[in-house]
Every structure is written in structure tokens, then in C-alpha cells.
Image 1 (cartoon, rainbow, N blue to C red):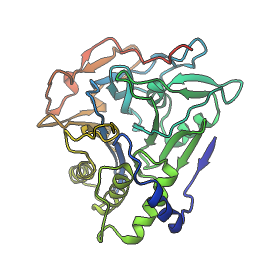
Image 2 (cartoon, helix red, strand yellow):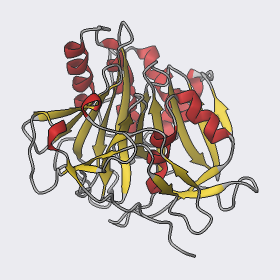
Image 3 (tube, rainbow, N blue to C red):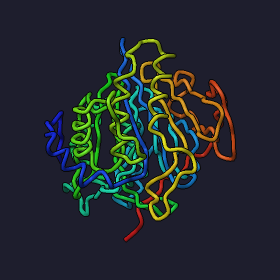
Length: 355
């Protein structure tokens, strides 16, 4: 396992990467963290996919018993924190925020390579479908999540998505202090990038190379020129520039509007796809997590309205029922939707196929 904090990247190395890496594209999700004044922290993300993910919102209380869905030796735990999450295919957690304000965003990464054997004798596996939920269930801060990963008590295994795509992803987390970390499995090992400066994550290339590309564009200057394609490397540069160019305010209304404007700027227009390259996909929804005020916003690209959920209005006490806000079937919500959640049986996390 490797943990990297604020490493230096040469501009010459970035120039070489421009020639070799930029043509590579990936599923076009983007995540960015807005750092405003007076402890205002907001995380936004876009979800881009070539098919309908069948996403709904769920609330999970404390005290839920979980299984890693990776066979008889799967890691097991009981959730310490309640959370509100967005599902994917009703088979995994793609995005969410827990009651402590920790946010986890799962994005596609084609270069991911997971362990072929347990990293340590005590390591227990979990399906990639439950990785995001594991973090939200167990940790209140980025530091806690990193320490938990560094113990080696768990490792992640891939599982193909229900629509046949490889389950190759990386995970970004942020907390109410504005701290961030990126978790990637590369060459079978977990690599952790940890810094408050790591506000943006997209897809390919791997995060280390994204930083080098971004350093190159910083020398040019965002007011002079920014790359404008839908490719992940270009979106990384634009999101990095705009998330820091917008005013740093403590006015929640202005901060939310500004953060939403950044994630819309790097979204992919609905209906765009490239035959033979499913990695260029349309934005189907966006989320915004106001970590100071514990408010979770959701915006579907097919809906005329944004709605939100105040976590203070949700009952996360142990023994409370799991609840679901159905978004599929053309459902449209506007404004505060906390009261519209209904009791539901929790979905089953997609298990790792048996060998």
C-alpha cells in the first residue's frame, strides 16, 4: 500500500503525458470539492454512464449488520453511522454522505487492478459494490478512513456491473474540514493520495498522472486557455480551475449555486455517445453534498427540478427502518424531499462471482 501527500510533478513530465495519455478516455464522471469561507465545504459530482443505472436514494440507519458480499470469508461489520446514498442498479452504493458529513464518490477507472490474493493473512475481501457503503458506515473523517485502509483488514475485489461493464473504479472521499483522499487499486495494490489540495477526481489516466497534466495547464493559465473535450483529463483540468476560480463565500445559497455551475460545466450533454467507445457517456445525474449543513442535493438531467434532503430530518437511530426515495419511472421531486422517503427492504449488494 502506498500513501502519497502533495508530491511534486515536473512540467516536462506532464508534457510527455499530453502526448501519450490524453487520448485515453474513460467513463466520464467528475468529482470536485469546493472550499469556501467559514468552514463551508461542498462536494459535487456528476454520474455519467451509457445506460440507465436505475438509481434511487436510500437512507440507512446505524446498527445495520453488513457482509462484504465476497464469499464465506467476507469482512463483516455493523454500521456506526447512518447515511443517505444513491444506488446503482439497486446492487451497489455509488455515492453518498453519512451523518458526520463524510462524503464518498465512486468513479470509473479503467486502469484499476485488484489484488489476486489477500494482502495479509488477516485481510478479508469485500465486493467493490459495497466499498463506498463500508466507508460511510464506519468512518467520520478522511483520516479515520485512511487509517482503516492501512490496517490491511480488508481488500476490494471487482465484480462486473449488471450491464456487463467491468467493475473497475476508484473512490474519492472528503470530510467537513475539506480534507480529501483518493483510493485506487493499481497493479494489485491500494494506492492512497491524501491532501486537502486533491479537490478533483475524474477517470483515466490514474490520479498521479492527472496531477501532472493539471500542473502543465496551470502554467498556461485557465483565463488564457482550457482544454474543452469530454475526455477525463480535460475535465480534470477544467474542474480544477473553476472550483478554485469561483468566489470563496460562506453564503450557502451562493456557494451551492457556484459549485453546481462547476459540475455542470464539466458534464457531458445528454445523448452523446461514441460507437465502439462506451467510455464517452452522457451525464445522467449530479449530486451536491453540503457538508457544513449536512444537506444532500440530487439533480437528474431528465428532471426540471433539483431536490434535497436534510440529514437532520432523517432518523438514523439503530432499529429504524431502511427508507427509499424512488427516482425511477420518471418520478420528479422539487425542494425538500425528506418526508417522501418510504420504508423499504434494503437492496442486496452485488456479490463477487464464485470461481
